[in-house]
Image 1 (tube, rainbow, N blue to C red):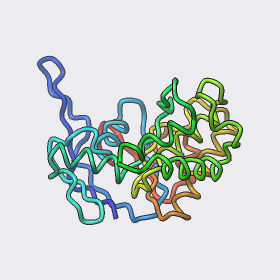
Image 2 (cartoon, rainbow, N blue to C red):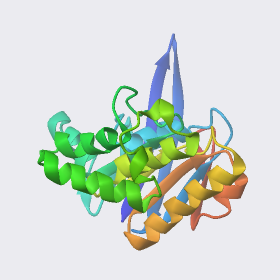
Image 3 (spheres, rainbow, N blue to C red):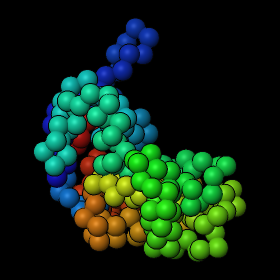
Length: 221
């Protein structure tokens, strides 16, 4: 269970304080495919960064399976992000001079996995996500947009995360490829009991979510 209570984030902009996220409270059960929607500037990406421990809240708490994330020190947060959360971004953020296989192996190697084990799991994940074996050694620039995003999903899954956070994961993709990526994420939530939260401006994606959270001016409405 992901439990968020009274979460707020304030930024300093010149002489003014900007309240980007305001007293957000929500609960998301394990294995849920959820969506965060709202207009540009509504606080969606800020909220996702807070949930992913990429930024610290001004006030409020985030708990995952009863573990208080907001109370962790920097060293514990690094391990928490690495071992517990998988991130998927609109631009996929793959390392361009590494192969698809190497991109997926990287988080596992950071976590201390042996190279052979990391390689086998990376191959398995890529195959499960429909990336053909003859493309595993290609660099991202030689893959289609859909293939790159599949590699990004495989990388996000590499350390068996409890929570996957996806920021506009279909923003650069055509409608057919977008549907394919969302279907993959929905299936992952069910098959691996992984909580998946997608930030999106696409109402079609939001309508497929089991839970949808609508932000306006940083407030959950």
